[in-house]
Length: 352
Image 1: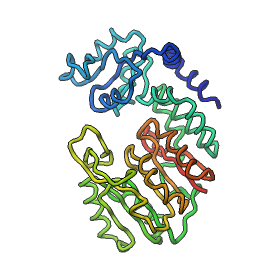
Image 2 (image 1 turned 90 degrees about the vertical axis):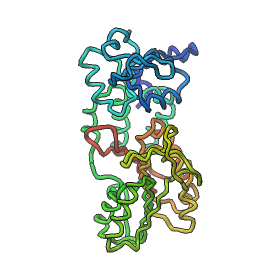
Image 3 (image 1 turned 120 degrees about the vertical axis):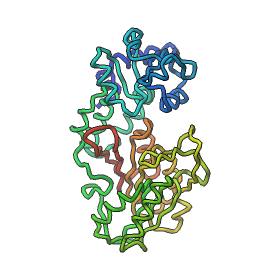
Image 4 (image 1 turned 60 degrees about the vertical axis):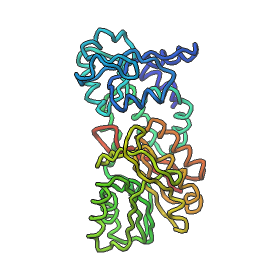
C-alpha cells in the first residue's frame, strides 16, 4: 500500500491544500474547534499553520481570544468556514464531528491529521515494518479515521478487547518479570494475575498520580502474592527529573507543561539495572517514547516482550516502532486496537 496515495484518496481536500502550501513555503489556513488546553498545546507545536478562528461550545469563551486568535460560536463558524480545514483539538472529537456534519459543514479532521501529512515517509516506513495483515489493516483504519472522523471504523479494526498479554503474539512462562508503566489502580496487574494464575517471578508497578497510587497500594496489600509485586510512585521517562503533571486522579493523568503540579520521574535502566526483565508494558499518556529511551540498556540486554501504547501523540505511530527496530532489528512488530467505540487503546506489540 502506498500511504501517500491512500491519504490523498481519503482526504484529497486537505492533502492538496497542504501540498500546495508546502511547495510555496506558505502556512496552511485552518480553523480549530476547541479553545482549551489541547488547542493551546496544538498551537505551540506547529508553526506552519495560520489559524483564522477557534470555535468553542463554551459561551464564556465566545468573543474572546486564544493566543490572539478570535474565538467564535458554532453559528459563526457556518458563516466563516469558507471550505477551510476544521481541525478538532478537543478529546470529544467524535461527538463534535457528528454535530458539525449535521449542520452541513465538511472538511473536518482529527488533531493528528496535520502531523500525519507532515510525516508521510515515516508512516510508509512503519506500514512496511508491520509483521502481519491484521496490523496493516488496523494501521490503515487508524489513518482513515484521522481524516474522516467516522468512529464506525473501530468496530472493523478491533479484533480483541483484551490487551497487553496476548497469547497469539507472546509466549508466557512461570518466571516472568514484568514492568507495568502506568499501572493505574492495578487493573493490568489484576488481568495478568488472572491469566497467569499468580505464577510469575516479579511485577513492578509505576504510577505517579496520587489518588491512583493509593488505590494501587491498597489493591496490592490485599493480594496473597503481594511479596512479588513492587509499586513506585514515579513516572517513567528518559532520566531522573521533576516534571509538570496534571494529577487528574484518573487514567488520563499525564505530563503537562501547563500544570501547576509536579511529579518525579525515573528511567527503567536505573530501577531495574540488574533485573532480567521479560516484558515491558507502557500506557503513560504520551511519555512512552522518552520512557523507551530510558529503557534502552534493559531492552538491549534482555530483549523483553513489549506492549506499548501508540495513540496518545500523533508521532507515537511512527517514532515508537522505528525506535524499537533501532534497538533490535529482529523485533517483530504487531499493531492491535482494543476499543470498538473510539480512538483510545491502540497498542504496538514487539517480540523476537
